[in-house]
Length: 299
Image 1 (cartoon, rainbow, N blue to C red):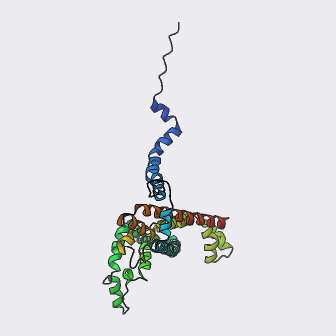
Image 2 (cartoon, rainbow, N blue to C red; image 1 turned 90 degrees about the vertical axis):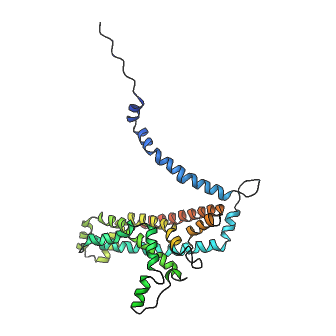
């Protein structure tokens, strides 16, 4: 008589989990989903709900805060200054980053050293960069000293109503240009040299190679840089807060600085929440338009 077969051991929960790739993936992504919900979705829903809540005892929803914001000259000025800032700084940073990336992609002397110089501002925290530029742009700072040494009049820079916003643009671009250059340079490295060789055989000039080879092949990195640069410049806060605090005469009062002042200086948390919702809506609208335009040009 044959001996009875040994009883099969019941699989443990660990063995069952290791054999289920979906469960393993969900377990790994669990902390990310939790962080997304508690750090992104929940604050967004709370801001929308709080901005729409009515002040009366009966509760309910109201658009009174939004009507008050859009009729507030300070908020209107913040929207205008942010739009003006974005219209100038986005093309400036992207075009300069593209030019530097094209130059660094060529075989130039001391190419590694130049890449280090371009990327060096990226590793410096934005707040530290703002402090450095704050010293450089002071009325008695080194830049005005240099201007006086060569016989040029001193400039107000951060204390001038006409030069404060351009000065903020320079400070932000000092960091941003190097950062976006890394992505565009990586995209240029992925373009096959055979495309340029074929264009040369067809008698294409340098400009024609750039227009008909480089730009079409660089469309995806350019789209990413365009969208990411737009979002980051809408959210500029530290340089404004450190260097000008929105002044002089609210000429650098960008929308993030206005939200901070409403929420933490004037204790208007409902107005700050409503301004945040408006900012997110504007950013999403601009990004959607950018995606549509880039898609149409790509087709």
